[in-house]
Length: 358
Image (cartoon, rainbow, N blue to C red):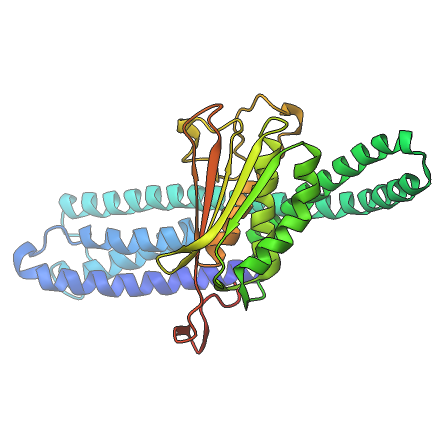
């Protein structure tokens, strides 16, 4: 309610300012136009009022503009008299068109408000859904671990399968929560200067079991020099974890995954290549879009929600970096490249390192 009232006052203030501007323009053109087209420039004021607040501000602006135009630009000056049919027609036309502008703008504003409300409701629903799913999953996970410890060797294969699926679901829920937080403006990053190699080590520890369980050969190539980056270490680790998990997921068993970390032109660069399913060329420009899924022949039932790569791009861009995808097509493997600016203590924004709170 308060927001609606504020918007209404803003609309009327914008209308008054636009009426003033339109009047000034009409005065400057009076020597050329004389007593003709006295309402034409006031369509500007009506449009601004309608865009800002809908039909009511538009109609109020139209009435005020018509009175002001008659007073200032129609003979005799200072009179509201309508002298002939031409002036009456011009007034009726101005008020009619202004009404149409107001109605169309009101319709657009209401549609936009409904769309924003629906978007907000969707984000709230996703957040609630993720939180509600997390609790039972945690119970299942720990109960399965306890069962795994007490079971015989023969039965442990089943508990390991359950554990992998629970961890995968938990990762999807975490991604869902993060996307929801970003959409609602509640996402925060805790920046600090770290060596990129340390983040890589943490990410590898987290995904190594998943990669090895599929029989993949993982090779890591990293420079010996330090690569200081100003980042949220947990979020950068999440970026690398998502990309490595994605590579393992869409590469046939006993495949190859290569992670390369180095310095290129003042940036820390992370390259993750695989010899898996690849990405169709027409999908490369959309692979980071939210809810976009590439048709894959592997694991179709577990293809995810289409938010993992969208979250990767969001996190990387919040760090002032870029992420890109390359592939020669289906069955040709793929490569994802993350570039983050290296930290430079001499370059600051507002007295703090580049990449402050998002």
